[in-house]
Amino acid sequence: MRYFAALILFMLTACVGESSADESEDFVRVPKSIIKDQGIEVEVYDYDHIVPFLEKENDKINVVNFWATWCIPCVAELPYFEKLNQEREDVSVTLISLDFVKQVESSLIPFIIENDIASEVILLDDPNSNEWIRKVDESWSGALPATIIYNNNAKAFYEQSFTFEVLVEEVNSFKL
Image 1: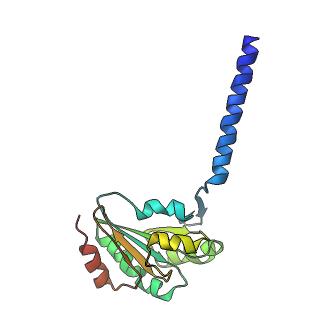
Image 2: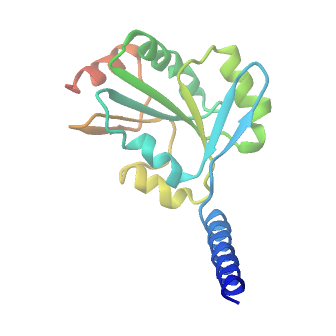
Image 3: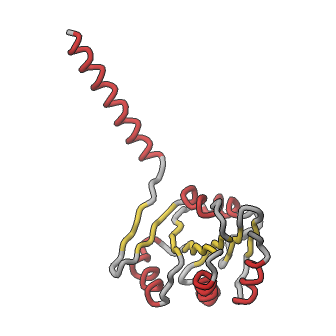
């Protein structure tokens, strides 16, 4: 009888554990990856899962650019972010695409390949833009391009396009 009771208790505990794990997966959206040929992978996140990209605590100057392949000024300035990423070891560049998820394989990944983008590219897929835009920065109207430059000591938000010279000047204003 003792073994039977222990077995029942074990089964109940195991079932409770599985149930709570399933509930947490339903409650919290787990980032998924969309993988394309030629080794290109774009991870898709909702706003809550991009927050760590906006709040890194490291020994670098972090540059986070919100952009889209359909945004002409965004596409025009991307080479400057790429050049900055390649030339500066003290800088970390993350490109957060606002392209549509259903167009990742037809637009975003071909764009990354054609333009030889080496910076980290992630996709923000969150329909609650009226909420997350203000969380990124209170002053952001939602227009693209938009950039955050920060380190452990300071943070600045820019709702503008950059030339390479101005981008470097802004990055250089952040002391490590």
